[in-house]
Image 1 (cartoon, rainbow, N blue to C red):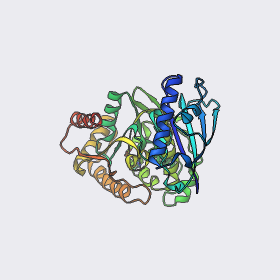
Image 2 (tube, helix red, strand yellow; image 1 turned 45 degrees about the vertical axis):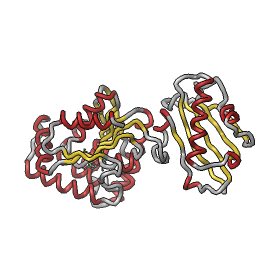
Image 3 (cartoon, protein in one colour; image 1 turned 120 degrees about the horizontal axis):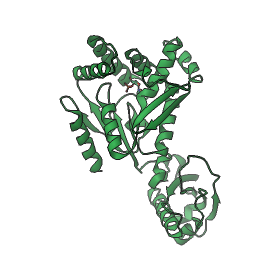
Image 4 (cartoon, rainbow, N blue to C red; image 1 turned 135 degrees about the vertical axis):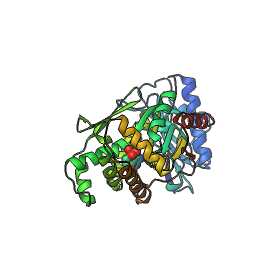
Length: 341
Ligand code: DC
């Protein structure tokens, strides 16, 4: 059986010693994690980004005893915004391993490249999930500024699709209509000083998406698989390029399965409703407490029971019940968890 194992790593400097060392670590890990005999490796293709010129990583393969396999090393074209000083590898193996069982290895900065296929490596990211009003966004902003990470509010992206549907009278009872509108929706996120600005077809909708009527529509459009596919792809692209604190409903269970830290925030429904009302009154948006409370219950129901990536606690997440806790206490607790990793 022939199969192909992928991997990538990065170096800090374009130096022969570091390229050899990091390539060897990556190859050893590929061999160990996939229980390979060196003889089973029939060929290896290495690619290096344009900023690496010092040595062929193939030298590293020869030095660890891969002598019979055919080795090829090529330089990549420059891709704007792509990871720097990166060595990628594709190892072809002939043996008993099945393609589906391959463990792909991404190390150092390259852990961000393929969060979907990486099995073991953790990426430097903080995933925060939880129901509406559990305090995710407030605390995620504080944590991201403390760590110097980019804060990504994924709920804002679903809200933006929801806002488009509301403004354009898209029939929310029909998945097909929501899916059809996706081609007309261009979402751009801009990040500066821990603040996320969101543009819908070039127009800043950062404030508009916060209106209470948008929340339930966001929850509805978020149950459509094609919507999730589009937005999850964007979210993973952001996490490839920067270290992130990302909050949402499926970050730990789906978007960044291999995030080093996963937190699930919860709180009782009355406390969550009160918090939402406080946020709205700070923004001078009018509200009715009972309506907000009902809306939160409805959203919990929709978000937890939808078929695709429902809100749930990731196996490796730490659950924090924030009822009765101050934001400062939640922040301290999360930072303790991050530092203990
Ligand atoms: O976090 P929020 O209240 O702004 O999110 C609005 C809606 O978007 C929420 O009810 C469900 C949906 N959502 C989602 O399905 N997955 C995410 N990762 C984030 C939000």
